[in-house]
Image (cartoon, rainbow, N blue to C red; front, side):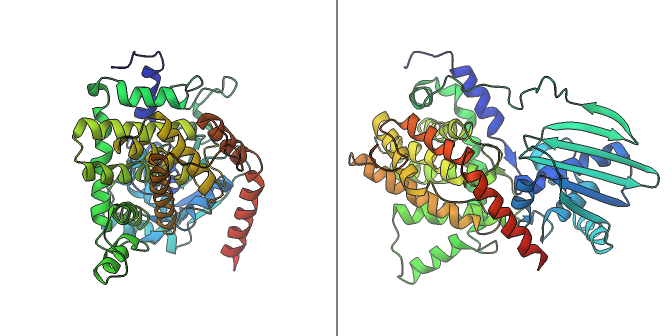
Length: 431
């Protein structure tokens, strides 16, 4: 067994904080949560709802189906949260939504009593809901993390506010001294009982995959792949199985299925990307629960380690970085050492670093499948001792330096890319 490191408690806190159930796309769900909390403070059904969100949250909420409603967009999320949201359920705020609640939310929308605009705030991730009823109003603001409430006001009185002078951390852990080797040593060497909780990711995201294979959701990519196998256009194999089952989970999640995803770093798709490829390979090699738990921990913690260096939302599609975690988990399951894990991550950076995030939508399942394919390809290369080298592009000889270079790109020049994406999407919405 690997000698315990002082980082191990931080790793456990990080995974418990970042790998949590989420029902629906987490950006509109953040606004639904703000609405639900405001409704609780208001004490009655609102007559009017005003939402304000950051530009990035607007980008990620414009085209996604809100679970249980069959409707798309942020106004739908705001209305559903205000009508029937569970203010204590975090990212599962809409888990108790009933058909009558959907009808009530639709009535508010049809009456033109719900509006959502862009807030002029510095926060990349920001959602705010103001609910009006008679002469009363309540405003709830969430910032920097999908469930981090920073302000509650009722009728002009501040009921709660985060002390911005202290800039309290949104995450109760630190990965400042971590590196990929420490992540690998923890996942492969920590006592099994400390890791077993991660198996819940396999249960939740596996159920989403099964639901997505029905073909009733999103772009039904998983079901399409299955049909093409039957027609002889694709052969059934490990790669095809990875693509089919991973895409199906994303199809269901983006298409409005009323099943929670186990998220990673605030994203259900990132949780799916870090889970399903590892599950498929684990089944292929006949891994027991302990080995599956270690591979899932390596995958999810790698994804968190990388995402910790990124903005909460950016122009970089973070499904790619979550899939780098999957590459790590798959490489280990297939017998790879730490060196092969690092090689696979570096090759993925050389392959999919430029994939943009142009908002949450059904097409996210395409990006999930692309990233899963890249991950498995990088693993096969690594097992053959081949990788994108440090002489090529932004990839460095060292895996941690390669990750740092990728994240610097997202924090730097891709900010202008992000602005351009948002401009294009807003202009489209006006046509």
